[in-house]
Image (cartoon, rainbow, N blue to C red; front, side, top):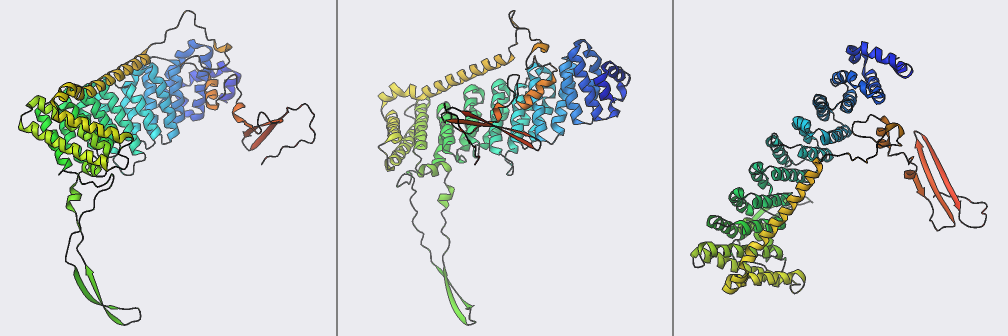
Length: 559
C-alpha cells in the first residue's frame, strides 16, 4: 500500500510518513527500504527537504536489519555532512564490518569507508580501532583493504593503539594453519614501517618485536625495515646492532644475512659495538679454514670406527622349522660438530660465493674502523685484521673451487676479495680508498632514503590537497547529463546500477559480449553476440560478405 501511495500520490506518502515516524521500525524491513527510497527521491528533487529526514535516518541506523542499516548510513552521508551524522554513519559501517560474516559485504562496507575517508578523515579516526577489528578476518583482501584505510587514518592520538594491534597481528601470523600468513606478515611489516616513518616515537616499540622474525619467512621485509630504522634513528642504533649481532646464528637466508652483515659493517662505529659484532661473527663462522672441496660440495667426514655388536637369537621360519639368526649392529654415526654449525657456516661451506664476499667486505670494514678507533697497533685491531684475512682467503678458495670461476660474477667476487686484502695489508691503498670503502655505501643509502621520504611527503600532500573549483569549470546539471556522478553526495540511483553492470551512457554493454569468429582479412567476417537472461540464451550472429560476389548457400558451423 505504501509503495502504491509512493508512486501515485507522493505528497500523501510523505504526510503518512510524518505522522508515523515512531512506528517505521515496526512495519518491517521492506517498508523501511521504501522509506529510504522515498527520502532519496524527494531530496533529489527538493534538496531543501533534507532536514526533514535526518532524524528519521539516524533512528533507522539502529535497525536489526543489516540492509536497512547500510542503506540508511549511505543515505545519511549523502544528505548531511554534519559531524554528528558522519559519526553515526561511520559507527554503523564499523558495526556492519564486524558483525557480518559474508566477505563480499565486508568489502562493500570497506569501499564505503574508503570513500568516506577522503572527505571526513577526522571523524573516521574516532572509529579506527573498531575498523581494525576486521583484521581478524582470514580473507587477505579484507585485511589489505583494512590496512590501507587504517594507515591513512593514523594520527598522533591513536598511533600507540594502532601499533599495538599491528604487533599483535604480526605475532598471530606464526600460527601454522593461517592462510597466506607470509603475505599477510609482509603487509603488516610494510604498515609498521609506514607508521614508524610518520611517527618516529613508535619505532622503538616495534623494531625489537619484528627482529624475532629474522629466522623465518618474511625475514627479508624485516631486515630491510631494520636497515632503514638504523639509518634514520641514531638513538636506536646501539640496541638494534646488539640484537642483530645476537641473531646472526639463527638467520637461515643468504640474502637476509648479506643485509644484516652490511648493517653491522656499516654502522658499528664504537669500540664496544665493534668488539661485540666481531665476536658474534667469529663464533658464527667457527674454526677456519672452511672445509669445501668444490663449489657447492661439502666434504664427507671420515667414518668413525666402532666395534660392531653381534646379537644371536632363534627364529621360526615360514615352514615351521627353527633357525639361528645372528645380527651385527653398529652404533649410529653422529656428527655433533655438524649439528652445532651455524647457518652462516653451512651456507659458506655449501659454496655461497656472494655471501662469502659480503662477509669478507664487512669484516674488512670492521677491521678498518677498529684501526681508526683503537689504533692500528692494538691487539684487538690486529686480531680483527688477521681473522678477516683468514676469512678472505677461505672465500677466495671457494671462488676458485667453482667450475666457472673465470666467468661472470665470480670474477667480480675474486676482484672484491683482492681489493679487501689490499686494504688490510697496504697502508697506501687504505689511505686512498679507505674513506670511500667505509662511508660511500652508507651515504648512498642515506640519499636513497631521503629521496623516498620526499616522494612519500609529496604523495601525502597530494592526497590532502583540497579540490578548488576554477571559474571556467563546467556546471554539471543532473537533469542534462548522460551518466556519471556529480559528486560524493549525489543521490542518483542510476549511478549505482551503472557501476554494478559496467554500462555507461555511451555503451550499452554489448561490446563486452561480442566474440569474433573469423579473422578481419577473411572473405566472410563473422562475429557473435551472446545475451543470457535467466534461463534464456540469445545468440546473435553477424555475417558480412567482404567479397564483390554474392554468396549463396552460406552456412555457419560452430565447433
